[in-house]
Amino acid sequence: MFHAASSPGQNRTPLPPAQSPVPGLPSPRRPAESAGRPGGQRDAFFDNAKYLAIVLVALGHSWSAVKSGNRTLEAAYDVVYVFHMPAFIIISGFFSRNFDARPDRLKRLITGVAVPYVIFETAYSLFRIHVGHSGDHDISLLSPWYLTWFLCALFVWRLTAPVWKLVRHPVPVALGIAMLASLTPGMGTELELQRVLQFLPCFVLGLRMRPEHFRLVRRRSVRIAAVPVFALSLSLAWWAVPRAESGWLYRQSAAQDLGAPWWAGPVMVLVMFAAALLLTACFLAWVPGRRTWFTALGTGTLCGYLLHGFLVKGAVYAGWADAAWLHRPLGALAVTVVAATAVTLLCTGPVRRVFRCVMEPRMEWAFDRDAVPAAGERGRPAGRAAEPRAVAAASAR
Image (cartoon, rainbow, N blue to C red; front, top):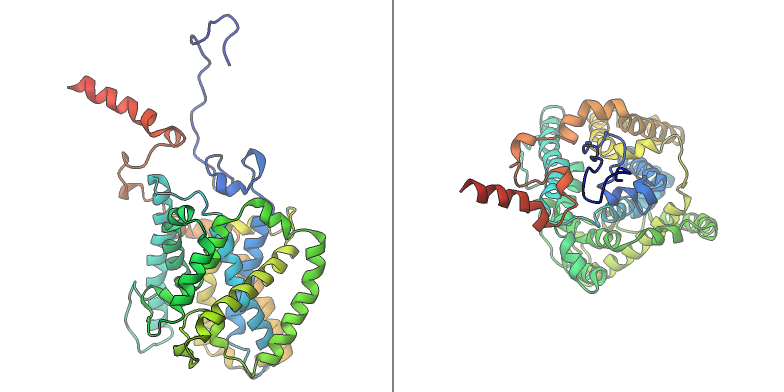
C-alpha cells in the first residue's frame, strides 16, 4: 500500500523482512505442502493418511516376526503388504509434483533424503553387525538394508520427476519399465533396483495426480464400498496363504528368481498394481479429512519410519519373537498394540526434535550460498533475480 499523500512510486511502505518457516508450520513458499488448500494451509487429510500408512508399515514389519503358524495374521499381513507401501509412495509422488532442478529443491532433496539415507544405512548396518551378530560385516551404500531402500528409491524417483512431466503417457511407460524389470533376474541388491522399478508406477501415478482425484475416493459411496472390498480381500488372502508365493508382495524379485515362468512377471506387475490401486483407494476412503488427535503426527512419519526398525530388529535379535504365546491370537493382538503405540510415539514432536540433526540437517556449510537462492529470490524470474548481481559486477570493473 502507498501513503495517502504520496504519488505512485514514492515513499512506499517497506515490506516486512522475509521470515524463515517455523518447524511444524506450513510455508507459503512450498505449495505442494498445501495440497490444494487455499491460503497455503496444510490439508489434514494427507497428514492423517501419512500417519495411518506409517502405522500399517510398522504393523507389517512387526507381524512378519510372529505370523508363522497364524493363518489369519498371515492373511492380514499379505493384504497390508499389497497396498501399504504403494499408498505411501503415491502420496510421496503427489508431494513431488513441484520438484525440479532448482538449487534450493535439490538442497532439500540432499538434506532430507540423501543424507538420512547415508546415516541410517550406516547405523542399521552397524546395528546388524554388533547387535544382531551378523556374519556379514559389509557396510555398502549401494546395497540398502531393511528400511533404507525407500530413501534410496525416493531419491531416484524424485530426480526423475521432471522427466515424467515431459512424457505424454507417463503411467503406462512406467508400467512398461516395471514389467521389463520383472523379466530381469539377478539384478542384485544394488540400489534395490527391482523395488525402485517395480514401485515406479505408483510414484509416477502420484506425481500426475491432482487434489480432485483424492476427493473422488473420499466420497461416501466409496467409503461404504471399501468395507466389502477389504472383507473379500482378507478372504482371498486367507485362501491363498498356503497356495500362493508371497514373494510377489515385496516387488524385489524377477519372475525367474521366484521360480515362475518369465511371462508371470509382467502379468503379476499388472495384477499387483491393480490390487494396490484398489486397496489404496479403499484405505484413503477411510482416512478422515478433518483434524484429529493424530493429524500433527503425520508430519513426523519419516522419523517413525526410520526409527521403528531398530525396535523391530532389536526384538528379533533379543529372541522375543520366538515366544510361543506371541504366535497365538492374544500374542498377535499384543504385538499390534505395541507396534502401533511405538511408531506413534516415534512420530511425536519431542522425538523429532531430538533426531532433527540427522533427519533434517541444515548443512549450510556444505552448499555454495550463490548456488542456492535466498528465500526472497525464489519466486522471482531468473533474469530479475540475477540483475542486481550483474549491476554490482559491472560497477566493480
